[in-house]
Length: 129
Image 1: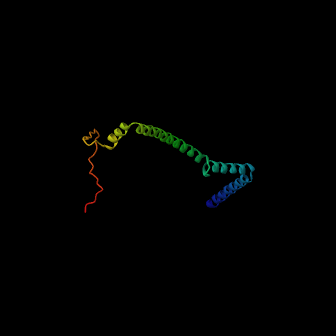
Image 2: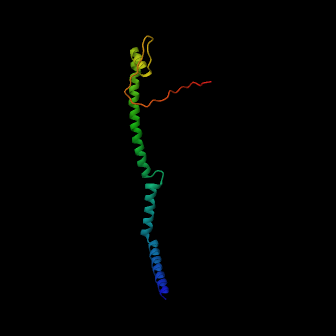
Image 3: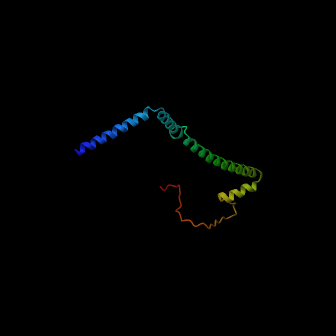
């Protein structure tokens, strides 16, 4: 008997919930709300042209602009160095000595370094046969 009364109560609750949902479904405001929520989700997050992707693209553009400025500065520095190399043969000699450790026939080169590096084995491209 107790079980039947609980089942009847549960059925009444389900019927009232169903009536409330049907009343809400038939409401014009509910339909507008659903359309607005779906539209906001599409425009804001789910679409390829969403606001989320727009903000990510703006960040990427800023990052690329900084990188472009860096490369332009490097380009200007390299252009100035090329002009100096074309004008002054001593500059070419200086770069050859500093960067590529080239020397004149009557010179010896000693490289002193304060860097603490691990000793690496020499790598050779020669094959032993």
